[in-house]
Length: 145
Image (tube, rainbow, N blue to C red; front, top):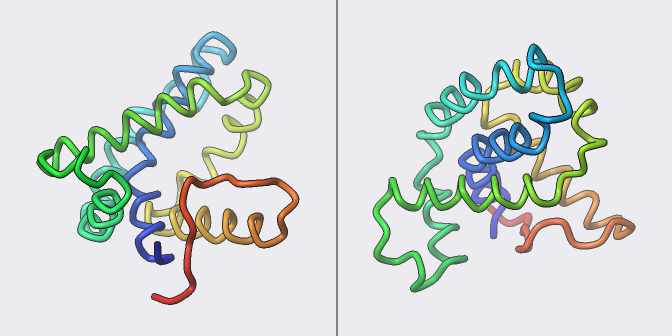
């Protein structure tokens, strides 16, 4: 998968990431926390912002999903991406991480979805290259765009 495709997929996944974090953190954070109050607004904004790069995300998702996603329409594919990411985050995120996420989210939220996707993918690629954390993403990112 190219960096551009991974970035587009990350942009598309942002609402699911936020939804999963909200689900995991709703019993840990105060009701007036940034994450709990702003998740829906941010998710809607990121959905709109990711429209531009949807063709790249869609192509990457279709390659990853193969025949299992071939008959899904665009709305179904986008929903599947969000649901998968939300489920993974809500299951794997530790409650101890909620304060950290809530603390940096306002700063990250100031950025457009494509920048968040770019920085996220670059960070995952760097961590993978260093090799001390193990596999984070279920796919490889190539530098050849």
